[in-house]
Length: 188
Image (cartoon, rainbow, N blue to C red; front, top):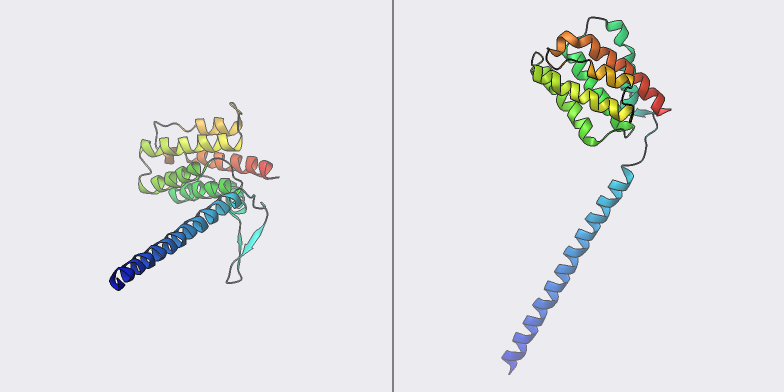
């Protein structure tokens, strides 16, 4: 009889341990899910456009929006001195500015950054030109939604997909300048 009593106690002990373990796992999953929801809710918060950020080392860095506006502001001084690195940098900075203002989807930001890598890896390819053109068209739509004949859309459409991007560098540079002006209007 003592043997049966011990077996029941052991079985009961394991049942309690299992129940406590399941409760702990459930609590962990609940906490992680709740934290994820808080992150999603906080991602919709707009970041002030003109704010500067001070890094841990004490040096000041511009927000991605300010970085892009400064980049586009120097475009006039570059003139025909535009190269692949400049175009790739512009696409990356444009993606950062759009992300700061929550314009367009996160996919657009990724597409612009991917286009920047294509510019660096294969600048002469017409496939690269088409990728960049599509990214600029999407960016124009995000900056000026609903404007079918907006200036940015016309600039982006003027990039010919059948030619090398480098031959059209001044058009891309003009898009950077025009988009910076439009982004500055939107951010205010």
